[in-house]
Image 1 (tube, rainbow, N blue to C red):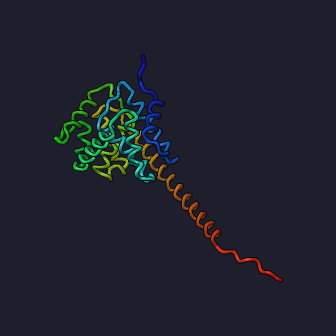
Image 2: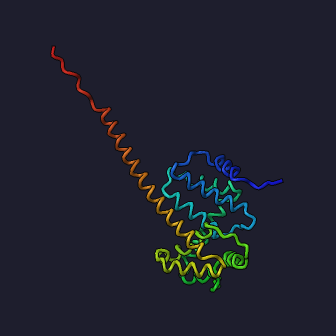
Image 3: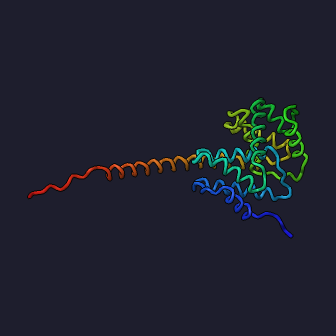
Length: 235
């Protein structure tokens, strides 16, 4: 008997947990992330690791920035994780832990550590995870893992990720140490950054449309409340 959860099961669970409607422009982001997390969760070669968790948290926080009402953001994130039967607190805690580690490291040390050429006595769990990834020929690489790597570099040195040459060299070193394809890493991160730009542009357009709509409503309101002089009588 096949008990593997389907995408439909996951979506149904999500919408049972988060019952408020999701703003149109963000709905696609949420559903794409949900499907991606679902497909990984049912893949036999996939195993949870904190870099993947950081990728999930970073993707969610970046793409949901500015979501209104703001209080719904936590509910949506929690429902996303619980829909694939995972603990949202673990994702958040692992992400925060890794961000703190990256902030406290010079970027050269971080690149060496992630690329397995330098061993640092900083986070034994992450150290063990990195070694396990490097030694696992069946490691299930994924886009969210790539975003987690990018987020670590960004936390350590925000300027490095803006420099294409430095970023490419850093990703090449990390990919070599973890036995991953640097071509896949680069392509996934190019797409991620491109989608962030598109989302930012879409939000600007939406804000302009809302502003124009608000002005029209205010004008109509003013017109409806302006007293109309009664017609003059010639009698």
